[in-house]
Length: 388
Image (cartoon, rainbow, N blue to C red; front, side, top):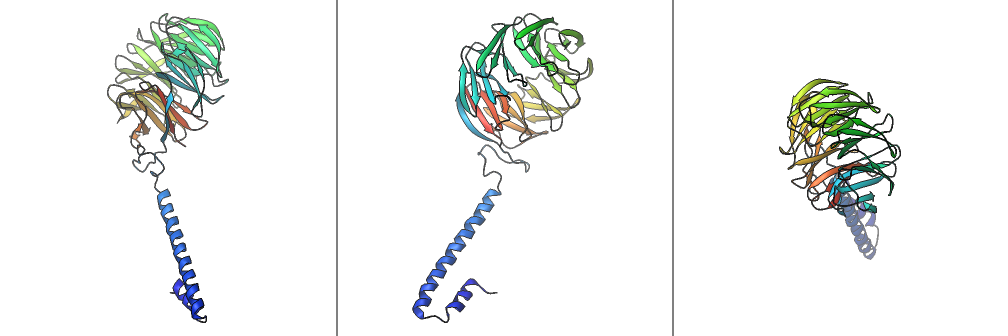
């Protein structure tokens, strides 16, 4: 084998001693510099292959699954953020304070661009066709419509409006009015109907297969079914249903009841019941078609496939909100009691919890920059987790 030093000696053999010495110093200096450059490049390649090197200490790797998440900002000041929604038309995040407390903050790329004072809500949603945001205000019995950064309309609905859902088939908004046992139907900025349902309507969801709206009548044992502006059925469920969610992979409606049962509905019939503690939130994972039920007092998330519980995942203390992140395929769970966000893939936890502000309550995903926004009720801030 011929080494670089051998080659240098051969070249120098026919030169004068002074010249040899000078060139030898130059060559040795160059060889040392090249060695240092190669060593530096090798070290850089080793570091870049470590998936934890680009993440925060809270984002570790579990079961060979990288955790592409980091908290970018935890100091956006918003008084008691209670609900957050993303507007895909204007690429705004709307963060609203709880009923009776504060204002509506409008965020773009992690910066508050506008605020609307004296707006506090119990629920919020967005019309994806035009970007209008609908704020349900329980205490004042009305719904505010926001277009961009301006109030477009204030609509009187029934007493004690609780929840709201968008009907993609006709573009209507449906508002459940807990106090008046009605559902208000909104077309744009006009209330076009008030439909009588059973006592205490709370949760409401839309079935994209049949175009029906399902309303949990928490004061009874029924789920009301609405088509357009008409009540078409009342489905008998377990007592006191209060939360409903739709699964587009099997077209089932899941109704969680205070009695400790989840009724699974297909069209207008209950096809199964699952014994399960009351859940504070339910979310769908399009990766595998699972439904995730948050068990606030048990510090767990139940995973349901069709009509069976296939897993119970331990998360942080008091899981309160859950959202799907399409950029990394994980479910994000806001843990109200431990000031963290847990990530779930399938039936497993991914990595360690991500620290955010105090008492995280609500989540919303911004597809324009792949951010997950976390409303921290206790600290009055919004955290931003990047998954890109």
